[in-house]
Length: 137
Image (cartoon, rainbow, N blue to C red; front, side, top):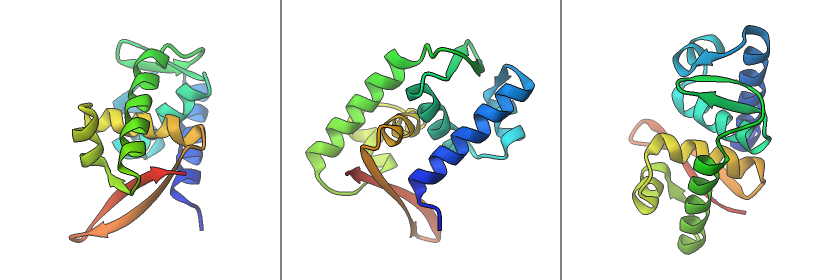
């Protein structure tokens, strides 16, 4: 069975492959083409940003040297610090509240941290809904 972190990497591969084949695409077109949901796409973007393989030009993503380090790297640092302080599993909405960054940006930061092999993530069912919880390795 694939772990959540391994799935982040597989999703990053899907995004890279689609961008390689189709060229620059908006986030909406990436979701529709890859069949990933927004959260999966955001973690894939964070993963690829850490690998220096994706860049954004306004609303379009393309393959190339990343220009996302400043934003995604800074957000990843905030998430890492929050996880270090908590020393326990934390859900995404709590991470957004603790770091004062948007939920979508938390997912991107988690992709970055996952690529650095700094976090463990698991999907848990809470009130009939899947929820992601993460902690530091």
